[in-house]
Image (cartoon, rainbow over all chains, first blue to last red; front, side):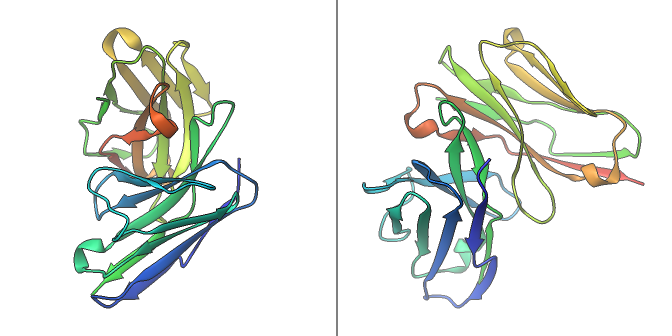
Length: 115
Length: 116
C-alpha cells in the first residue's frame, strides 16, 4: 500500500484563523479523499480530490470553508478557513488503491484544536 | 442510501478472551465492498480487511477472523485470545461499486478495551 504522510500532525489555532493541511503520497494516485473526525465520532467524508479537476464536496461542506488543492498525483492540501472551536477534529486524507481503487488507505491524520 | 450500524459502542474484555464486534449494513447495490479499520489511540486508521459482496467465504488472519453473511447483512469481526494491544476503536465501512469515487460510509465505531 501507499505510504501517506500529513503535515502538521497536530496544531492549536486561534478562532478566525486558517490552517492548511498537507497530504503527501509516495506514489501517483488518481483519487484522494479528505475526511473529518470530530471528537468521539466516526469519519465523515468532506470531499474527493482528483488531479486536474475541482474537488467534489459532500453535503454540508463548502469550498469557501474547506478549499482543496490537488496540483499533482502525489499531493493535496485541505485548508480549514475562518476556524471556530467546532472545527476541532482529526482531519485525515486517504487514497484509493487496489484493482478498482476500492480500498482506501489513510494518512496518520492531523489533530486540530481551535481555541 | 448506504448505512453501516455498529450497535456496540464500547466493549471491555480481559486479556485472552475472545471478542466479536458486530457490523450490520444496508445497501441497494448488488455489488459492494465491506471493510474493517482499526484506530489505535495514536489516531491513525489502519486497514484490516476488504470483502467483496460476491465472496462470502469467511477469512482468518492470525487471531483475527471475519464472518460475512449476506442473508443477515452482517460482517462481524472476531478477535481470538485478545491482547492489550488490540485496544482501539474499530470501524466497519461500506463502499458501493456504483457509487461515485468509491465513497466509504463508516459505522459509528466500537471502542474495544482489553484489560490485562
